[in-house]
Length: 93
Image (cartoon, rainbow, N blue to C red; front, side, top):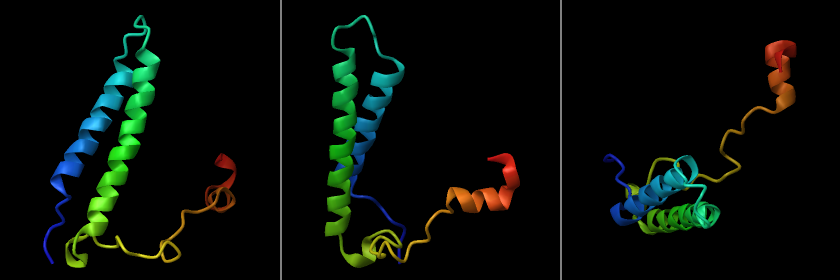
C-alpha cells in the first residue's frame, strides 16, 4: 500500500474554493453591494468541489483510496453524546 494521493485536479479545485470562501468571509469589502452574494457563491463552490473530489476518489481503484474510505457508516465509531460527556466530565458541561 502506498501513500494516499488525492486526485489532483479535484483537490486543487477544492483548496481554491476554500481559499475563496475564507477570503469572502474574513476579508470581505462590506461596502460592496455584492459582498454577501460572493460569500454565498463561495460556500456553494466549496460544496460542489467537495462533491467532485468524493466522486473522483470513489472512481479510483480500491487499493488507491484512503484507508477506511469504503467503511460502512455503521462501523464508524460514533462520537459520545452530550449525556456521556457530562458523565465523564461531571457538571462542567
